[in-house]
Length: 286
Image (tube, rainbow, N blue to C red; front, top):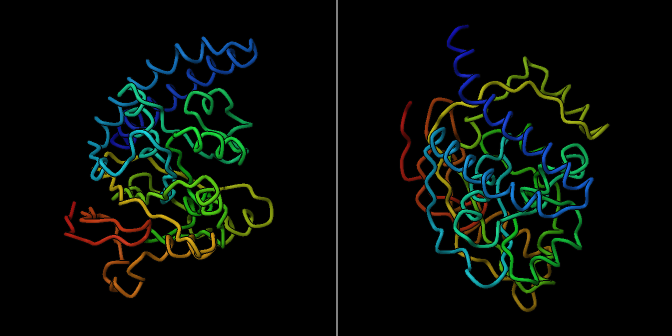
């Protein structure tokens, strides 16, 4: 019990407190209709977030050279329960004096914590995403959303036919860049006490995500950014999305062992060619 409280104090409470303070300050800026307050707050928030997450997870980024410097791109990633990887990329991009990497969030998040979403450059409108991509920004989207974060097992993609991101990428003429973060699933473990089916039924009926999170374990997180994928001239958005989901080499290129992930193991990934087509290099027991 003592160990649990210590882990809770050092892993969950600091980031929750930081998020609450940032949300409060940015919410005030929204009410006062002042962009200055939010702009001043963004850099210090990014600095603290960057060093905290770096200390907690020892983040590594592989394939950062695949992110374009001057043109827009749509970063498509697997949605873990806690998206520390995306927050880390946001903080890193802000500190590197480049355009902050923002993206799509659930409309409930934008409604509940509008200030925090403003600082993290999160929004829920399609038109905003299109506008930012056409202006040369790198934006992110997780087609699986909260459903994937809570109910996915062994990094299973739960896109449920969501192809809107591919239509946006084709409309804006930007590539899709797949991203996968090794160990993003076991880091914030979820305990459902055998009630997963019930929680899932609640979500399907109401859209409300119910889960019992545990502490966020300080495991090593490695972000792997794949090469840009471009939509073919005669390829429909749906076909493009399906190609992105299964990987250019096809699911048959990966064996059953590659799909398995057991708790207590760190996955070391070699390459990423799609959001769910990664080559396992090694497994390290912890």
